Length: 428
Image (cartoon, rainbow, N blue to C red; front, side):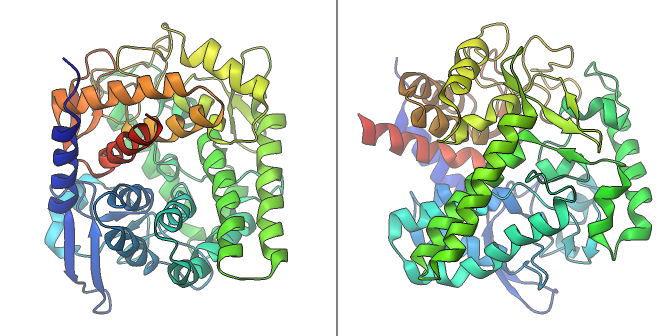
């Protein structure tokens, strides 16, 4: 029996409505109105989650999609920095705050760390649907400043690739690709989470003397990491900024600047991260830029770039994505290849990104596959994504072998399935 699209759509809309948080914060009496990832588990506002929520909300009410970005932009700082978490109601959610500790705060109400810059893609999608140039002009200045902050503060060697200073900045907190640098055993066991927590505390302790000088932290080389997924999203965001700058009516030289930077990031990924023998892209660890040879979905992520070398794109898909010993499992796309020792599809380690399938990954790679002429594979991923949700509901992630839901319930960005269903209907 084919999956019931209408049932899945109704569930996604229910979650987007039920996860909405509204009120007035103790943070300067600011009003907030956003969709949280999960009311019980993740009640705060996360940077890339809100960008994904905005895209899903386009299929509910475009005005709510705009509101999601507006609320997020209240966290933008004068120097361009935008935090990965805004803690609108700390006192109301003390238990949830303990669960996400340790976090590094720059202010009582927001963190000192970043997340992947999905926001430019989200604003581009909002404009594509609404053609609201006034909205673009409203939110573009802080986003533009953030992308310039990334270049100034997180690209200390000026190689075009931005660097992370701790694992959660990628959003992939416990991914096994970080294990060696974080001192975690490669097998996913019950000891993985305690090991991660101790290692994170080690990072925070090392950074304490530099809280007021964030630009100096990458040079410490405690955890300096050029992440393929983050930089692919960064390159895509720069392309979006070039288009949005033109929409806003700004001088053409700024659009040219962002376009040129996007090209430089894509070129750096292809020249510094591509492994011709393995046919994948590796993250680069430390100032020595040692390839992190752990096969995770991020090795495939430059597929989201339309101008990726077609030969490389073909190898990523044919040799790895469609490899049944790696990523082509019954419910793709697993966050870690099944061939890796750390592969943990059943969530044994109780830490994230060590095997299960996530909807935001499927969403990004769906569009990448379509851009590279592999629409049949993209459609199959949508079919299996819908089947997961129909089986287990709107969950944080899913077992790629069975489709069983795991992690938080009613998880916000899994509602990206609304965008995938709409895209498939438009191509049918």
